[in-house]
Amino acid sequence: MNREVMVFRDARRLAECARDIWGDVCRTSSEAGYFRAVLSGGEAPIPLYQSLAEEGVSCSWDATHIYFADERFVPFDHPDSNYGAIRKVLLDKVPLRPSQVHPVPVEGSPEAAAIRYEQEIRAEFGLPDGKPSFDLAVLGIGEDGHTASLFPGTPVLREKRRIAAPVFPETAAHARITLTFPVLNKCRTVMFIVTGRKKAAVLEGTLAGEPGIPAVRVRPRGRLFYLLDDAAASAWKRTGVETGEAV
Image (cartoon, rainbow, N blue to C red):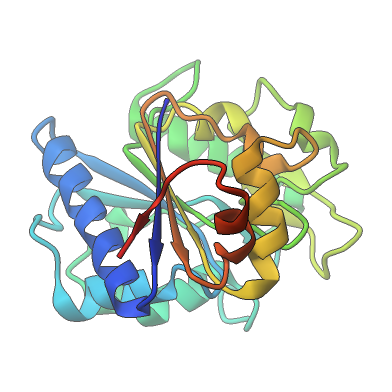
């Protein structure tokens, strides 16, 4: 795992850097036929998605397939839907066919929906067993250290077999479906985008490797980026855990 931490004073520059990483991974991956990206909801990655939609990216959308790190078990038109939010700022504004976008199912029960999502991923990858290797995952970190919907204290943290699993966090309003650690750790590139002073303490612990923080357990086989704003990095920069790139 090759970890790189970058701190930005300007939100626009952070989004530009994230877009550049997206473009680099897309170009390399699409040479093999596909670029498969995993997206997360929340506020932090929205500027990236807006930048991709408004500024474009130096890579064709033709080979791109979009998946989701997690989803709240609500209809797509619900205000809490990750898919619904990302569709408005990105998916409806770029030339992707419906067959290139793979939202998490939200019908039936969370358990049944997780099984269907795993089946769809396996079918798209032509993978009867084992775990898929996504090219890029865009992730965030919650104030409690969760990433995707891998919340502290939930059984899914111990999941080793499944690609997708239901989650029933006591601290969240909705049941959720999430990709699991074995899947995230097979990604070729993971990009954490973390912003805001409320994330400063948990980010400091994450970069220090505190074992109780779920985000610490994301250790992809390839590259790992942390793209941070000054506010999120404020506690970490005081500790001097490692030298980041201030831009």
